Image 1: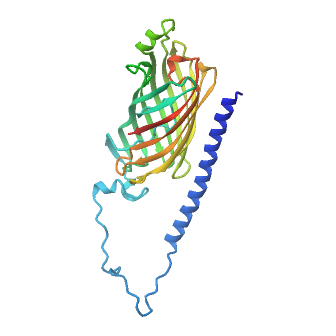
Image 2: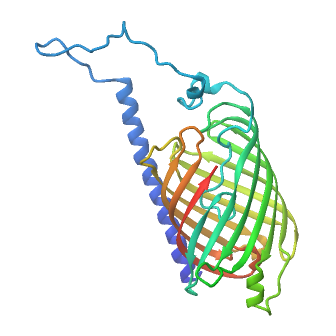
Image 3: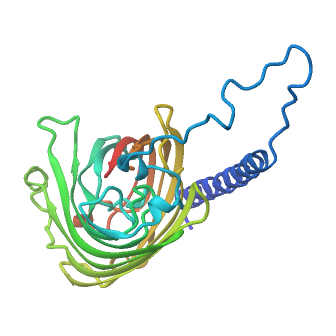
Length: 334
């Protein structure tokens, strides 16, 4: 194992240890809060000078909860457990992986490697639910869902004249998703094709372009271990062309608090491993961490943070190349 791989694995181990420590602390806080709700401290109004509550239980009124508010209520409540058909619902039952380097979303990362060239890894796309038969909760909906995903993933040398395009990957997929409680499953199809940029080909006339294409059957599972920690794994088998080979595996761990965060936001951290047969089973490691904000009604996720990647080239046109890059970015998931 190279020194670079060792440092990368140690970094991933450090993130995993931090996630476990955060989970333990969160569990303790949750237990304390539950204990206080179940056994509130008594209030004594018998002594002189104390004042009774301004509103007694006899005059208290139940809050007015509208239909729109019901969809953002307490997870597990009766209003949210009702299952019905929904066209273009809020949220998704199976989200994109936070550190997945080939996940459809909207964002850009500015990364630099040993060659000291700053590059943008830009992603223009997203993952959405088209049809659902399930619950109304946008944060953790349950039932069945039809998803569509799609994105173009482009690499540009942003500081060079005219910001030349090195390469771009195009991805599209349709997924059937099921979720019950903390466990979600997906099965479906995705297509990915890779293309070298015109400016790159002009600057490198001896480069032999390949027609890298994957048409993959894919299956995966995503599990909420706690309110903030998730794990996942997936496998895909593809019909291939241009240097691609059939099998790929992806798996990871992430810390990302669920539910609305408010203006203050919350921290996040994630590590993703990606293993492909066409890279002779070499596994890439992608790590990202920073701050996140979740929408109250939509559960859309906006993040800013740092990123480190080591492994086969993130642009799959360059199959067989290795790279190590670091930097920062912003990302948005629908």
